[in-house]
Image (tube, rainbow, N blue to C red; front, side, top):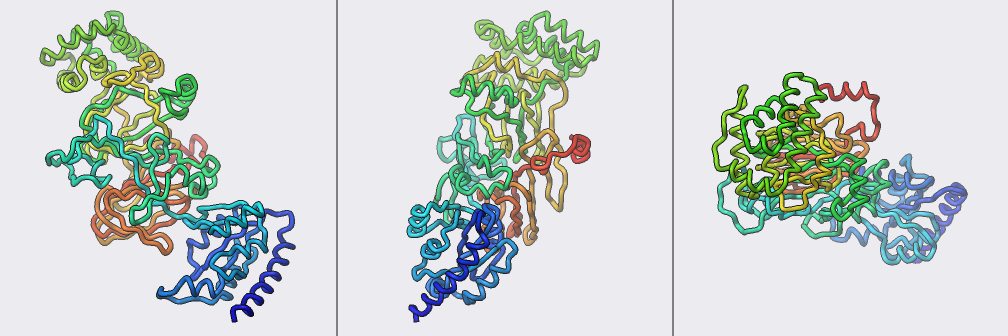
Length: 583
């Protein structure tokens, strides 16, 4: 009868309680609960994390009456509570296990009897109202989210005016708001531009956590604060992701800009938090999803000198002292002299009075590109084309002259551009995956109606001329490539192509979380006993150390970001060079 069951369960519970109490003196006792019907790896992961939260773990196993009520109408084998208790007790992380004494579907009465320090809930489970009341009454701390292996995310969409129209934007496609294909000439379906898709927990555009059916369950920021174990041991204390991933769809040129290093970012945020929103640095990479154009890094000094000599308006803006310095640098070939000459030319140009810019730009764009010496005519003609295009977009903006200073880059699908801190750059057109340290700090210097911080920009830039900085993808498996660099501390990106019918197992990071999205195709993501459908636009966050099986139903194209191994275990410099011999 129910009465005799209750009496026997309470007797067994008190005996277990006395053993646990004796063993747990002067320790931090954690209690976890569950049906474990049947026990699977997700349960084990949850219990291991629960044990890590204290020194002694007691597991409450829901009794047979509770299990029977829970499984009404559900197929499958039900294991008796006594066997579930024995199975849970056999786990190395479990110090004791007992059957719940409760007659309702909570474990509140068992909790009251055990009176632990902490009560842990696994996955997306939360304490019932009755359990929460007992915890509040007895001063038991609630832990939630332990054992979460994956979160589905709803990214944040930014509609900046430089973005592509809905019918042509990769961002709109991934946001589920457009039919799109690379090179599509379909007419725009709506007037709002779709510029950026933010995936992460930056306060300026945090993702939301959603259920498989699309219902929103909260903000990623608060979820990670409540369930920091998702992030792994090192990141759990801060409760934030160290990187941010985006997709950009660019129709109109972005501003001439650079991102500060840590020291400068901290100073800018301290002095002007209204302009510079955080204190972090922001190195970033851009991986082309379609044909992509950009400006990045200063040109070689010989090419810049040829441009200055050929374009009278540019020569007027940089001044004769800079022209002479560039000529001297070309002749000497000394790196320090080259950097000083580029600095002088750029800073002089950037401080040209506005009235002079208004006079020079119309004269410059009214003519065709002149011939340049030493074989630089083709590069100058391309720069002129970009200047004229941007003039139509931004008028007589000082940023037009920066186009002559910066390397022009044309990228094919899969190519990767690296924007280190303090490196000037601007995106011109195309669709990209972008990954960066988690920051939104931008110092602008032109091609924008926004605030141009000319003095800070001129102070911070690295004035080293040379080829545009790119990262070659490194094959790490069948149709899988890694984008990484020795100077990128917080993130690396993996591009994965899986042909229809193929399957692979991945553990992208043993010590930190993994953030990923599906760009195209369809498939399945299997973790423990849960399967998630993958289609274009699905964004997921895997907990630290999670193994997953990826199965392609159609050809599947995904990008995933995580912290590189050296983020958790920094190697010696010689070991780092071995890991990245071409960086």
